[in-house]
Image (cartoon, rainbow, N blue to C red; front, top):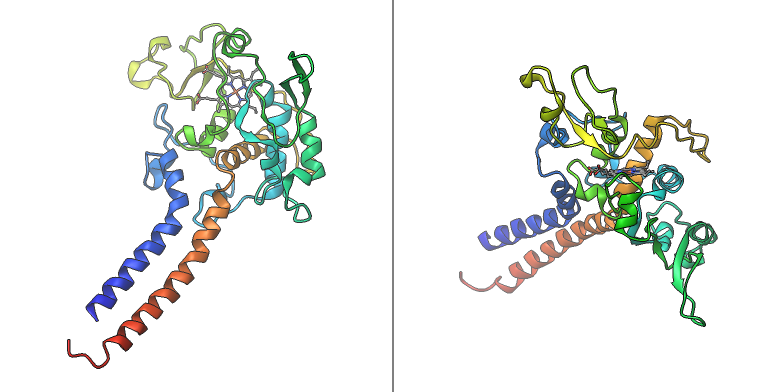
Length: 302
Ligand code: HEC
Protein backbone atom coordinates (compact mmCIF):
# COMPACT_ATOMS: atom_id res chain seq x y z
CA UNK A 1 0.00 0.00 0.00
CA UNK A 2 2.78 2.39 0.92
CA UNK A 3 4.44 1.90 -2.44
CA UNK A 4 1.20 2.67 -4.19
CA UNK A 5 0.76 5.83 -2.16
CA UNK A 6 4.26 6.89 -2.98
CA UNK A 7 3.70 6.18 -6.66
CA UNK A 8 0.48 8.18 -6.61
CA UNK A 9 2.17 11.08 -4.86
CA UNK A 10 4.99 10.93 -7.38
CA UNK A 11 2.61 11.01 -10.30
CA UNK A 12 0.62 13.83 -8.79
CA UNK A 13 3.84 15.80 -8.41
CA UNK A 14 4.75 15.02 -12.00
CA UNK A 15 1.36 16.18 -13.21
CA UNK A 16 1.64 19.36 -11.17
CA UNK A 17 5.08 19.87 -12.65
CA UNK A 18 3.72 19.53 -16.16
CA UNK A 19 1.04 22.11 -15.60
CA UNK A 20 3.41 24.42 -13.76
CA UNK A 21 5.95 24.38 -16.57
CA UNK A 22 4.53 27.25 -18.61
CA UNK A 23 4.25 29.42 -15.55
CA UNK A 24 7.90 28.87 -14.74
CA UNK A 25 8.88 30.99 -17.69
CA UNK A 26 6.54 33.67 -16.45
CA UNK A 27 8.04 33.57 -12.99
CA UNK A 28 11.43 33.73 -14.55
CA UNK A 29 10.39 36.92 -16.25
CA UNK A 30 9.38 38.28 -12.84
CA UNK A 31 11.98 37.11 -10.36
CA UNK A 32 10.50 39.37 -7.72
CA UNK A 33 8.10 36.43 -7.36
CA UNK A 34 5.32 36.15 -4.84
CA UNK A 35 2.00 37.97 -4.95
CA UNK A 36 2.26 41.70 -4.67
CA UNK A 37 6.02 41.81 -5.12
CA UNK A 38 5.54 40.57 -8.65
CA UNK A 39 4.07 43.91 -9.59
CA UNK A 40 6.72 46.02 -7.96
CA UNK A 41 8.57 48.05 -10.55
CA UNK A 42 12.30 47.61 -10.66
CA UNK A 43 12.69 51.36 -10.79
CA UNK A 44 11.64 52.95 -7.54
CA UNK A 45 9.85 49.85 -6.27
CA UNK A 46 6.36 51.25 -6.69
CA UNK A 47 3.51 49.24 -8.10
CA UNK A 48 3.10 48.74 -11.79
CA UNK A 49 -0.01 49.84 -13.58
CA UNK A 50 -2.50 47.12 -14.37
CA UNK A 51 -5.40 47.38 -16.81
CA UNK A 52 -8.92 46.36 -15.84
CA UNK A 53 -9.15 42.58 -16.09
CA UNK A 54 -5.43 42.10 -15.46
CA UNK A 55 -3.40 39.78 -17.68
CA UNK A 56 -5.45 36.61 -18.29
CA UNK A 57 -2.71 35.01 -20.37
CA UNK A 58 -0.54 34.79 -17.26
CA UNK A 59 -2.97 32.43 -15.47
CA UNK A 60 -2.36 28.68 -15.37
CA UNK A 61 -4.77 27.90 -18.18
CA UNK A 62 -5.02 31.45 -19.49
CA UNK A 63 -5.21 32.09 -23.22
CA UNK A 64 -5.00 35.11 -25.48
CA UNK A 65 -7.96 36.97 -26.92
CA UNK A 66 -7.44 36.77 -30.69
CA UNK A 67 -9.00 40.20 -31.33
CA UNK A 68 -6.68 41.74 -28.81
CA UNK A 69 -3.66 40.06 -30.42
CA UNK A 70 -4.74 41.45 -33.78
CA UNK A 71 -5.06 44.94 -32.33
CA UNK A 72 -1.68 44.59 -30.61
CA UNK A 73 -0.09 43.49 -33.87
CA UNK A 74 -1.52 46.55 -35.57
CA UNK A 75 -0.02 48.82 -32.92
CA UNK A 76 3.33 47.06 -33.31
CA UNK A 77 3.21 47.33 -37.09
CA UNK A 78 2.04 50.92 -37.33
CA UNK A 79 3.97 52.41 -34.42
CA UNK A 80 6.77 50.28 -32.98
CA UNK A 81 8.11 48.44 -36.03
CA UNK A 82 9.78 51.58 -37.38
CA UNK A 83 12.33 51.23 -34.56
CA UNK A 84 11.97 47.72 -33.07
CA UNK A 85 12.47 44.47 -35.04
CA UNK A 86 11.52 40.93 -33.97
CA UNK A 87 14.23 38.78 -35.45
CA UNK A 88 13.14 35.51 -33.82
CA UNK A 89 9.56 35.70 -35.06
CA UNK A 90 8.51 34.66 -38.57
CA UNK A 91 5.45 36.05 -40.29
CA UNK A 92 3.96 32.58 -40.45
CA UNK A 93 3.92 32.48 -36.62
CA UNK A 94 1.06 34.99 -36.87
CA UNK A 95 -1.10 32.32 -38.48
CA UNK A 96 -0.17 29.41 -36.23
CA UNK A 97 -2.64 28.02 -33.74
CA UNK A 98 -3.03 30.52 -30.91
CA UNK A 99 -1.61 33.31 -33.06
CA UNK A 100 -3.34 36.60 -33.96
CA UNK A 101 -4.38 35.50 -37.46
CA UNK A 102 -4.89 31.77 -36.98
CA UNK A 103 -7.67 30.49 -39.20
CA UNK A 104 -8.78 26.84 -38.91
CA UNK A 105 -9.30 26.76 -42.69
CA UNK A 106 -5.56 27.17 -43.17
CA UNK A 107 -3.79 24.69 -40.89
CA UNK A 108 -0.60 25.58 -42.74
CA UNK A 109 -0.09 29.28 -41.99
CA UNK A 110 1.92 29.69 -45.18
CA UNK A 111 -1.39 29.32 -47.09
CA UNK A 112 -3.24 31.87 -44.96
CA UNK A 113 -3.99 34.84 -47.26
CA UNK A 114 -4.12 37.34 -44.38
CA UNK A 115 -0.66 36.28 -43.21
CA UNK A 116 0.67 36.41 -46.77
CA UNK A 117 -0.67 39.91 -47.22
CA UNK A 118 0.68 41.14 -43.87
CA UNK A 119 4.11 39.72 -44.68
CA UNK A 120 4.13 41.45 -48.06
CA UNK A 121 3.62 44.80 -46.33
CA UNK A 122 7.08 44.49 -44.74
CA UNK A 123 10.29 44.89 -46.71
CA UNK A 124 13.28 42.59 -46.28
CA UNK A 125 16.74 42.57 -47.85
CA UNK A 126 17.61 39.52 -49.92
CA UNK A 127 20.34 38.53 -52.31
CA UNK A 128 19.35 38.73 -55.95
CA UNK A 129 20.24 35.25 -57.31
CA UNK A 130 21.12 36.73 -60.71
CA UNK A 131 23.31 39.67 -59.76
CA UNK A 132 24.41 38.82 -56.19
CA UNK A 133 23.33 42.27 -55.10
CA UNK A 134 21.31 42.88 -51.96
CA UNK A 135 17.81 44.01 -52.97
CA UNK A 136 14.78 45.11 -50.96
CA UNK A 137 11.77 42.90 -51.62
CA UNK A 138 8.36 42.35 -49.98
CA UNK A 139 8.61 39.71 -47.22
CA UNK A 140 7.04 36.26 -47.55
CA UNK A 141 5.55 34.15 -44.76
CA UNK A 142 8.79 32.30 -44.01
CA UNK A 143 10.74 35.53 -43.46
CA UNK A 144 11.48 36.91 -40.02
CA UNK A 145 10.31 40.35 -38.87
CA UNK A 146 13.08 42.59 -40.17
CA UNK A 147 15.25 44.95 -38.20
CA UNK A 148 14.21 48.46 -39.34
CA UNK A 149 17.83 49.64 -39.23
CA UNK A 150 20.68 48.37 -41.40
CA UNK A 151 22.86 47.83 -38.31
CA UNK A 152 23.28 48.90 -34.67
CA UNK A 153 25.32 51.97 -35.57
CA UNK A 154 22.58 53.25 -37.86
CA UNK A 155 20.01 52.46 -35.17
CA UNK A 156 21.91 54.48 -32.57
CA UNK A 157 22.45 57.39 -34.91
CA UNK A 158 18.71 57.51 -35.53
CA UNK A 159 17.86 57.37 -31.83
CA UNK A 160 20.10 59.81 -30.03
CA UNK A 161 22.73 57.19 -29.26
CA UNK A 162 20.34 54.62 -27.76
CA UNK A 163 19.64 51.22 -29.29
CA UNK A 164 15.98 50.20 -29.61
CA UNK A 165 15.96 46.59 -28.32
CA UNK A 166 14.71 43.75 -30.50
CA UNK A 167 11.19 42.75 -29.46
CA UNK A 168 11.37 38.95 -29.98
CA UNK A 169 11.58 38.21 -26.27
CA UNK A 170 11.17 41.66 -24.74
CA UNK A 171 8.23 40.57 -22.57
CA UNK A 172 10.39 37.85 -21.04
CA UNK A 173 13.51 39.97 -20.84
CA UNK A 174 11.96 42.56 -18.53
CA UNK A 175 10.72 42.07 -14.98
CA UNK A 176 6.95 42.20 -15.01
CA UNK A 177 6.48 41.16 -18.66
CA UNK A 178 3.35 42.65 -20.23
CA UNK A 179 2.71 44.63 -17.05
CA UNK A 180 6.05 46.39 -17.38
CA UNK A 181 5.53 47.26 -21.05
CA UNK A 182 2.04 48.58 -20.27
CA UNK A 183 3.35 50.64 -17.36
CA UNK A 184 6.28 51.99 -19.37
CA UNK A 185 4.01 53.11 -22.22
CA UNK A 186 1.70 54.86 -19.77
CA UNK A 187 4.46 56.03 -17.45
CA UNK A 188 5.64 59.14 -19.28
CA UNK A 189 4.91 62.13 -17.13
CA UNK A 190 5.91 65.74 -16.73
CA UNK A 191 9.08 65.56 -14.62
CA UNK A 192 8.35 66.75 -11.09
CA UNK A 193 9.66 70.15 -10.03
CA UNK A 194 13.36 69.79 -9.17
CA UNK A 195 14.09 66.96 -11.60
CA UNK A 196 16.46 67.92 -14.38
CA UNK A 197 16.04 65.94 -17.61
CA UNK A 198 18.98 65.92 -20.04
CA UNK A 199 18.32 66.78 -23.69
CA UNK A 200 17.22 63.78 -25.74
CA UNK A 201 16.08 61.95 -22.60
CA UNK A 202 12.56 61.45 -21.30
CA UNK A 203 11.39 60.93 -17.74
CA UNK A 204 9.38 57.77 -17.15
CA UNK A 205 8.10 56.76 -13.74
CA UNK A 206 8.40 53.04 -14.56
CA UNK A 207 11.73 52.88 -16.37
CA UNK A 208 14.25 51.19 -14.06
CA UNK A 209 16.89 53.73 -13.23
CA UNK A 210 18.01 56.24 -10.69
CA UNK A 211 16.81 59.82 -10.67
CA UNK A 212 19.11 60.73 -7.74
CA UNK A 213 21.85 62.50 -9.67
CA UNK A 214 19.37 64.74 -11.50
CA UNK A 215 17.24 65.55 -8.46
CA UNK A 216 17.72 68.74 -6.56
CA UNK A 217 15.05 68.09 -3.93
CA UNK A 218 15.10 66.06 -0.71
CA UNK A 219 17.21 62.93 -1.50
CA UNK A 220 14.86 60.80 0.56
CA UNK A 221 12.03 61.67 -1.80
CA UNK A 222 13.65 61.34 -5.20
CA UNK A 223 11.05 60.53 -7.86
CA UNK A 224 10.66 56.88 -8.90
CA UNK A 225 11.71 55.69 -12.36
CA UNK A 226 14.42 56.86 -14.71
CA UNK A 227 15.25 58.40 -18.07
CA UNK A 228 15.23 56.81 -21.50
CA UNK A 229 15.87 57.93 -25.05
CA UNK A 230 12.50 56.76 -26.39
CA UNK A 231 9.84 59.47 -26.37
CA UNK A 232 6.32 58.32 -25.50
CA UNK A 233 5.57 56.29 -28.66
CA UNK A 234 1.79 56.25 -28.24
CA UNK A 235 1.39 59.92 -27.42
CA UNK A 236 0.22 60.90 -30.90
CA UNK A 237 -0.48 57.43 -32.32
CA UNK A 238 -3.77 56.95 -34.11
CA UNK A 239 -4.14 53.24 -34.75
CA UNK A 240 -7.55 52.52 -36.25
CA UNK A 241 -8.74 49.22 -34.77
CA UNK A 242 -10.65 47.01 -37.20
CA UNK A 243 -12.99 45.70 -34.48
CA UNK A 244 -14.17 49.18 -33.49
CA UNK A 245 -12.34 49.29 -30.16
CA UNK A 246 -11.72 52.95 -29.26
CA UNK A 247 -8.14 54.07 -29.80
CA UNK A 248 -6.99 55.29 -26.43
CA UNK A 249 -3.40 55.32 -25.25
CA UNK A 250 -4.24 52.81 -22.48
CA UNK A 251 -5.97 50.48 -24.93
CA UNK A 252 -3.12 50.57 -27.45
CA UNK A 253 -0.60 50.04 -24.64
CA UNK A 254 -2.51 47.07 -23.26
CA UNK A 255 -2.98 45.47 -26.67
CA UNK A 256 0.63 45.85 -27.76
CA UNK A 257 1.84 44.56 -24.37
CA UNK A 258 -0.31 41.44 -24.77
CA UNK A 259 0.85 41.00 -28.35
CA UNK A 260 4.50 41.19 -27.24
CA UNK A 261 3.79 38.66 -24.47
CA UNK A 262 2.39 36.30 -27.11
CA UNK A 263 5.31 36.97 -29.47
CA UNK A 264 7.88 36.17 -26.80
CA UNK A 265 6.47 32.64 -26.51
CA UNK A 266 4.03 31.82 -29.33
CA UNK A 267 3.73 28.18 -28.22
CA UNK A 268 2.89 28.93 -24.56
CA UNK A 269 -0.85 28.29 -24.84
CA UNK A 270 -0.37 25.04 -26.77
CA UNK A 271 2.06 23.91 -24.07
CA UNK A 272 -0.37 24.76 -21.28
CA UNK A 273 -3.11 22.83 -23.04
CA UNK A 274 -0.81 19.87 -23.47
CA UNK A 275 -0.10 19.98 -19.73
CA UNK A 276 -3.82 19.98 -18.98
CA UNK A 277 -4.32 16.96 -21.24
CA UNK A 278 -1.45 15.06 -19.68
CA UNK A 279 -2.85 15.24 -16.13
CA UNK A 280 -5.95 12.99 -16.68
CA UNK A 281 -3.72 10.59 -18.59
CA UNK A 282 -1.29 10.38 -15.67
CA UNK A 283 -4.16 9.87 -13.20
CA UNK A 284 -5.54 7.03 -15.32
CA UNK A 285 -2.09 5.53 -15.65
CA UNK A 286 -1.52 5.63 -11.92
CA UNK A 287 -4.86 3.86 -11.28
CA UNK A 288 -3.90 1.15 -13.76
CA UNK A 289 -0.45 0.77 -12.20
CA UNK A 290 -2.03 0.49 -8.77
CA UNK A 291 -4.53 -2.15 -9.93
CA UNK A 292 -1.87 -4.22 -11.65
CA UNK A 293 0.28 -4.00 -8.52
CA UNK A 294 -2.65 -5.33 -6.48
CA UNK A 295 -3.26 -8.12 -8.98
CA UNK A 296 0.37 -9.19 -9.20
CA UNK A 297 0.89 -9.37 -5.44
CA UNK A 298 -2.57 -10.83 -4.67
CA UNK A 299 -1.39 -14.32 -3.65
CA UNK A 300 2.00 -13.42 -2.34
CA UNK A 301 2.76 -12.94 1.33
CA UNK A 302 4.36 -9.48 1.80
C1 HEC B 1 11.39 56.37 -32.82
C2 HEC B 1 11.85 55.08 -32.45
C3 HEC B 1 11.02 54.25 -31.49
C4 HEC B 1 9.70 53.89 -31.61
C5 HEC B 1 8.71 54.25 -32.71
C6 HEC B 1 9.41 53.02 -30.49
N1 HEC B 1 10.54 52.88 -29.71
FE1 HEC B 1 10.71 51.76 -28.04
N2 HEC B 1 12.64 52.30 -27.84
C7 HEC B 1 13.33 53.16 -28.68
C8 HEC B 1 14.66 53.36 -28.17
C9 HEC B 1 15.72 54.24 -28.79
C10 HEC B 1 14.77 52.58 -26.98
C11 HEC B 1 15.96 52.48 -26.06
C12 HEC B 1 15.81 53.57 -25.01
C13 HEC B 1 16.93 53.65 -24.01
O1 HEC B 1 17.49 52.60 -23.65
O2 HEC B 1 17.22 54.78 -23.57
C14 HEC B 1 13.49 51.93 -26.83
C15 HEC B 1 13.21 51.08 -25.78
C16 HEC B 1 11.98 50.41 -25.62
C17 HEC B 1 11.70 49.44 -24.58
C18 HEC B 1 12.70 48.90 -23.58
C19 HEC B 1 12.73 49.68 -22.32
C20 HEC B 1 13.66 48.99 -21.35
O3 HEC B 1 13.20 48.52 -20.32
O4 HEC B 1 14.86 48.88 -21.67
C21 HEC B 1 10.41 49.06 -24.73
C22 HEC B 1 9.64 48.05 -23.90
C23 HEC B 1 9.87 49.80 -25.85
N3 HEC B 1 10.86 50.59 -26.38
C24 HEC B 1 8.58 49.68 -26.28
C25 HEC B 1 8.10 50.30 -27.44
C26 HEC B 1 6.77 50.07 -27.95
C27 HEC B 1 5.74 49.12 -27.35
C28 HEC B 1 6.66 50.84 -29.06
C29 HEC B 1 5.45 50.98 -29.94
C30 HEC B 1 4.21 51.30 -29.30
C31 HEC B 1 7.92 51.54 -29.24
N4 HEC B 1 8.77 51.17 -28.25
C32 HEC B 1 8.19 52.43 -30.28
C33 HEC B 1 12.82 53.75 -29.81
C34 HEC B 1 11.53 53.62 -30.29
